[in-house]
Amino acid sequence: MIIRRRSRNSSAARIGSLGKPRSILVTGASGFIGRHLVRELDSRGHDVRAHSSADGDIAGCALDYEGVDHVFHLAGLSFVPDSWNRARDYYRVNLLGTINVLEFCRRSGASLTMISTYVYGQPEHLPIDEEHPVRAFNPYSHTKILAEEATRYYAQQFGIRAAIIRSFNSYGFGQSPQFLIPKLLAQALDRSRHEIIVADTRPRRDYLYISDLVEMLILSMERRASGTYNAGSGRSASIAEILSVLWSLGLEPKPLRSENKPRTEEVLDVIADIGKAKRELGWMPCVGLRDGLAAMLECMRGKS
Image 1 (cartoon, rainbow, N blue to C red):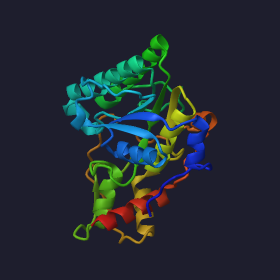
Image 2 (cartoon, one colour; image 1 turned 180 degrees about the vertical axis):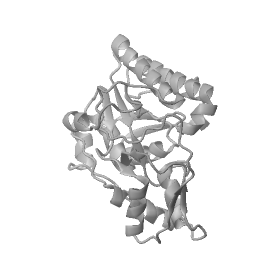
Image 3 (cartoon, rainbow, N blue to C red; image 1 turned 90 degrees about the vertical axis):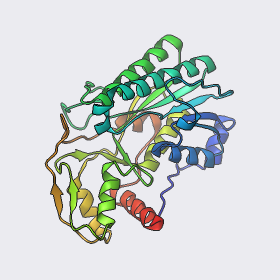
Image 4 (cartoon, rainbow, N blue to C red; image 1 turned 135 degrees about the horizontal axis):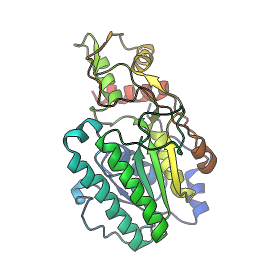
């Protein structure tokens, strides 16, 4: 059950309303989000140029693509724990890479959708809207705050139309096993394991299935959006709740054990306020946690 989200109108009708297919550059095209986005853009008839690390270091390579009218900037380092030990790499790739892309947009006149992350630190209130103060609570989030600031500066000074998408916790098939949900699924499917082990059982997160995130990204282009938008489901789930869903899908239940290794400055609960995306983009998440996990489970079983 691979979930391919579609909006109410056909893809042909949507492209027709824009006059012609778009010429689009996707950076980070070989990453988790990038692969899903490129596949969907291709299916809708757009002319997609895919840039990955094999095509050059995004922090300094020449982006010499011609005729591009929109850029999805996804390239970057994203695994939070690594950012503590590789801070310099994260600043170089995530900040200088964004500036390199902004310079390309400035030269070419292309509009931009930039993928950001959860940048709010310890929340003052739930749900969290886009006006909530931003606070860096790890090097990765700080690099994204700086990249956002650079994007807003270029928009103000050079007239680049730019949308910033703050993705809380996306998940889906093909995500790195370093991330929580793939790690839980791998342990749940491993018959040699008799328990599920995680570093910390306390945090709750707002999980958004990949097809819903891809749809939001595409809508930011189609609606010629500018500004900042939260991308989440509007609810949070604990690790225990995720496992409960997996057991309800037919996997053999296993006990959950914590290693009691909390992350530095761990945030215990996040819920995205997604009202702005609903109002301005006409976007709504449509894949619930159970359906998203079922789709991942089916894909993982099919691959094994």
